[in-house]
Amino acid sequence: MQDEPAPVRPFRLNANDRAILALLEEDAKRTTTEIALSLGISRTTVKTRIDRMRDRGVIKRYTIELESPSAGDGRPSTAFFAVQLKRPICRIVYQSIRGWPELLQAWSLTGDTDFLVLVRATDSERIEYLRERLIRHPEVSKVTTHLVLQDWVRRVSPPADAAGLR
Image (cartoon, rainbow, N blue to C red):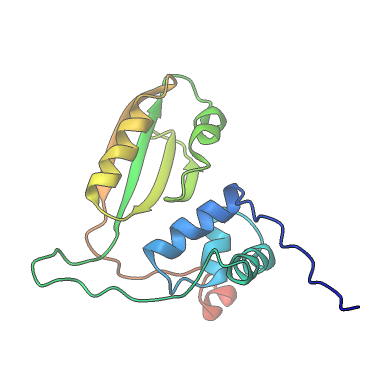
């Protein structure tokens, strides 16, 4: 009697899987470290989830897309949202945006800006959509949007020689 293969159980995407896929759709060359930092989860978790999605056929292949001559520059749009709150409770606003796949980082700040949010989206229309969602939050009184025109440097961690600086 031959052993029959075990039935393949349906693979359910969780919130991390969907966020990983969204980041890979924007840039398939992103490293597991970049994805992990963007999502606030471990690099091992990202690798395990990607491997599992590839094994289950959710991710079929990695590819590149060439822009058409009439298209824009083809780069994702990056923006900072400088947020002023009605009350200093960044945690409540963060809870409402933490599931955005476009969310890269968020900070509580001192001064006129209470909360600073960094997002990267497929285009400026998506940035505007996110801005509109944020401004409708009941705790938000004002959002100032700063689009990034040029990346001059991007580091995941400080350069090695910075550790010796005082």
